[in-house]
Amino acid sequence: MAEKTLGIVIPVHNEQEMLPRLTERLISLRAALPQLVEVIFVDDGSKDTSFAQLRKVVETQPGWRLLSFSRNFGQQAAMLAGIQQSTTDAVVIMDADLQDPPEVIPEMVALWQQGWEVVYGVRRSRDGENWLKKLTAKLFYRLLARMSDIEIPVDAGDFRLMDRKVVSVLCQLGEQRAYLRGLSAWAGFRQTGLEFDRAPRAEGATNYNLSRMIGLSIDALVGFSSAPLRFVTRLGIFTVIVSSLYCVVVLILWLAGINVPGWTSMMLVILFLGSVQLISLGVIGEYVATLLVEAKGRPRFVIAYDSARVDPAK
Ligand code: UDP
Ligand code: MG
Image (cartoon, rainbow, N blue to C red; front, side, top):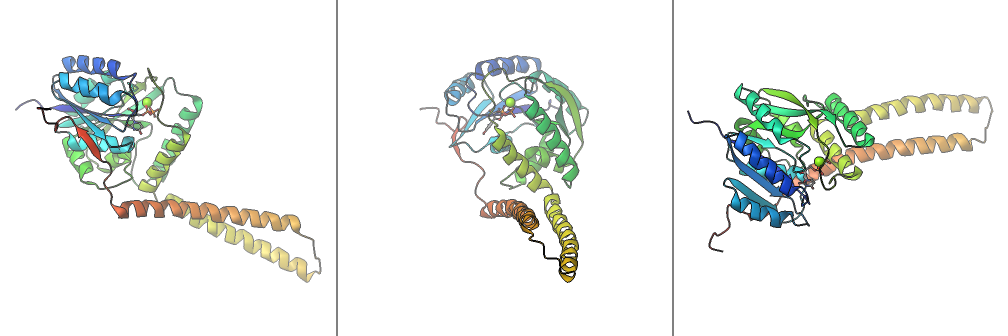
């Protein structure tokens, strides 16, 4: 039987400083790993020289391919586009900034050859990231694991190897707000974690500010849990109980002829109920918004350039 083949998918957004180093590491990885026959870069609407650099690089390396989006569609869309185009028996998803060290890939391949169909990287340590990111990431992974209806491994990012069986399942899903780590867990099959130390970003800056991180977290929660909706219901029940008790107090005071001026308590009640209502509306709104996005069924991304489809005569 011919040896099974491996491909790597790399989402790229404004990574011009990283690309020379990334290319170098990938070339030495290919020398060490004969199964590696395909590398797909997905340029997610970069505004720097990433696209121009990658276009030159893929011309010189056999089996390397470049897709480019018509604008920035986000990392999740870029990863999805890459795995949809991949042709190998297994696919590794890796960040362009070398925070996911390529040297871990041979270990992933070894586990795959032992029969594991998903090998996800688990971050043992995260060097070079500030305490806020570490803390929020830690809390978020645990919150999601508690709330989600399926088992999503904690501290595992997108860096993972997936067998063709799993990749085909993911490619069939039409979800707009895909959260790939969750979906790959959802797909099932034999899954195992592999611990690694997350390297600091060598060059450039992170593409994720607080607001994008919150956005991704909301997509993950809405996609994999109805717990926030149940929480709203419980919040409602709680306020009904507290308000009923308070009504009794108010009635007794009225019967006793005590008419308190009551501005403070009135303000507290209005503020409390107002906040509860706004939070509840917001939570429901997130689910409705997701429903709307899914109902519209627009494509997840638009591919403007594909190095495999360019007329060689040009
Ligand atoms: N990325 C992307 N589109 C985006 C944002 C990020 O393709 O809109 C890519 C980015 O180039 C990198 C990976 O996704 O390869 C992870 O991004 P980043 O390193 O900025 O995230 P962090 O590691 O800080 O969470
Ligand atoms: Mg990074």
